[in-house]
Image (cartoon, rainbow, N blue to C red; front, side, top):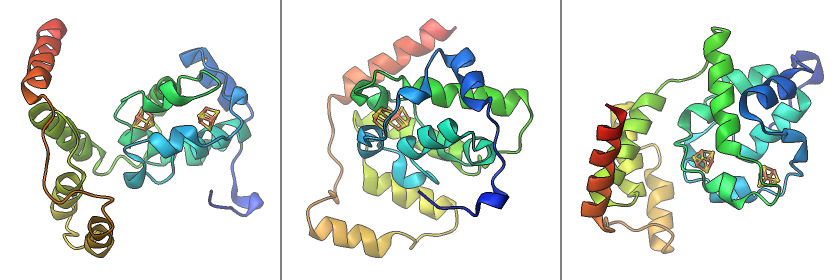
Length: 186
Ligand code: SF4
Ligand code: SF4
């Protein structure tokens, strides 16, 4: 976690309480085991990660929690919530923060988050799983930094941590799920 000079940190002692009222989740149960952050598929795009977010809420660091992009890159996959040994629904906590940002008209860093969410869902819908190389590449091209992660990506491909070519996992089933969800929404 980034250490900030204490004089510059704005603290809101009621932040955890507000989030508890909106989400029903008690962030003070978190003991920073990092299981949520290690499983989060969107963490590389976030300013922080779910574990840091929980600590910032406990401390009442209102600006870091509400102005950063972490919650806006959350795709509500629930991986963190499923992995948490304390049964905290972290995805629900992220939703509560989005509500606070909107209710209090806070200027949050949502830049590129909409594009990221759209790309994520489109890849998932047609491929049945996330294709990290494609997602990062397209996002970097659209945001004007086409070579941003190229060196790191090549290194990861060499070490077998990333797959260069996409793979598909039951895409037709996923497409059916998406169209069913769309019908339910109507
Ligand atoms: S729900 Fe959000 S924060 Fe949790 S693992 Fe998924 S993307 Fe990450
Ligand atoms: S998995 Fe749960 S207990 Fe562990 S760091 Fe995340 S929120 Fe905290």
